Every structure is written in C-alpha cells, then in structure tokens.
Length: 381
Image (tube, rainbow, N blue to C red):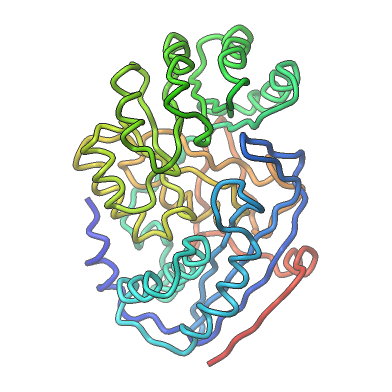
C-alpha cells in the first residue's frame, strides 16, 4: 500500500516559477444529460506549471451551473486567477504535502486546486524523467473502460445510443437515472442487452421517500447503485444499504478521507468512486483509497468527464491495484469532437493502455490549444 505522504516528501520541493492558464471550449459530440441538467460544450481550464525544463499540466473541469457541484468554470477561473496564482507564484514548498496544506487553507474550490496539484505531480515526474505511474509505483497494466450513457428523451433513444457505443467492447455499462426515469430504463436495457455488467447513477436525485425504487431495482442484478441520495445524507445511505442487496457506491458523498471513514463506519457504502476533480487531486485521492482498502471497500475512478489532461491523470490513478472496477474514462472522441492531447485516448477491446513517456505520457498539442483556447494568462515570478 502506497505511503503517499512519504513518497511526496521523497520527491522533494515544488517551486512554482511559471504558471500558464488556458480556458478552452470544445463541442461535445452530443449533449450530455444527467438529473440536474445538460451540457453541449466542454468548458475547462488547463494549467501548466513549470520550473526550469520541467513542467506539468493539470485541468480544472467543473461543469456549468449546478451540474455536479457548486463549482463552475467561471468560479474556477476566478479562484485561479484572482486568488490561488497570486498566493502561489514564486513560492517554494518542501513537498506536495506542504503545497496541499497551503491549498487547503487558501481555497475550498477542489476543482481549481486539482489543476494545480496534479500539474505539480506531473512536474515532479518529468523532473525525474519517469512516468507519473512509475513515480507512484503503480503496476503497468491496461485499464478496463466502462461506458457511461446520459439521459435521453425516450427509451428508444437510450437504447440506440448504447448500441452505437457498446460495440467498442466496453467492460460495463452505466446509465443515468432520475426520479420518474429509472425502473423502466433498467428494464429496457436488460431486455435489449441481457446480462451485461450494468449499474445506475442517480447523481443524488433521490430522497429517503424513494427507497421503493431501489428495492425494485434490487432484482435486476446491478453491480451498484451510485450516489442514490444527497451527498450529505450518509445516514440515509446507510439505511438504504440495509434494505437492499445491491452495493451502494458513494461519489459526491466522499470528498475527503474523513468522509470515507464516517461513511464506512455508518455502513453507508460498499464501493467508492473517486474523482480527482472532486477530492482535490492525487494526495487526497490516495488518502481516501488507503482508508477504503483498509476496510475492504471497493474502488473505481470516475470522471466529470474531463478533457485529455484530466482523463490522463484519472488513468494514472486507475493503475492503482486497489481500483478493481472499470473506470469511467473513455476515448477522447466518445465525448468531444476533438481533444487537446496527443495521442488521443483510445480504447481497444474495452481496455485503455497508457502510452510510454514521462509524466502523464500524453503531450498537450499547442495547435489544439490555439484552436480551442478562448482566454489565456501567463504568470512568471
């Protein structure tokens, strides 16, 4: 089991000499709908930190409005430009542990913090001339990719969308549900696709008054119920878990290792989905994973979804041997008409293999940044 604090200290100091930020807009292949809304353009902030010849990229990938959280692209931009960069530029930290402690004090915006923190981890890996996976001492293994499908106006459209993508050989299917669109969707998918690995993601749309929905879904052989209740209702999740056989997976409900400890103690979940964006980066993600592994809680890596920079970081985390369920990371062209990295992320037979090379293994394409960048900032100490 990785001792992330010790590793961070061994990697040495972090100096934030230059910070570059690019806000990019890339159209989605089709609108992505969940219980709280829909988006048709990916609006993200890409952050590059550098020190001498070493550099690293990170991504702040909040969705607009209240799609998943209170954070938005606008709030991330403001937090980075007006607050985090002025406080961090030119500073030296003894390790990423020290940087992370400073970020904790400076900001509650985990999406903005993730961009800085993950970029610094890649900088450290590139400084040593190794991949980030090697820096973390994770095994070199292909990552199982799962298909995630949003909400559609009709069941026929949902089934048609799954058919379009399922032929690519994904290792499991996740469908979104919301109140009024749930049991019949699962029935339709089971009728059309049979006994495939399948689960539902409610994105916290249900309340304790809706337990009967999940009791009915309990008969469909689902892998998990992802975030059925509000993020703060860990007690409710524990009550529901006692009434259903299907494992409950917490997503929005776990932001810190302390959240994980409390949820596990209450019996609120049997599985945890860790999103780097939601928890603030690798350091907290690996702290959460350590808590879950100690208690036998299943793990997998989710996405917002992010562009290639954020997805590449998620793939590194998914190499951790404790993450045993397929990731939500999918090919770049699954969601977006284009991406900012080279090579793009691709899937073969339902598996994604990380490319060789330092850092994330992927490079940011400057021509793509020029094409899709809508605003840029450069800061030098």
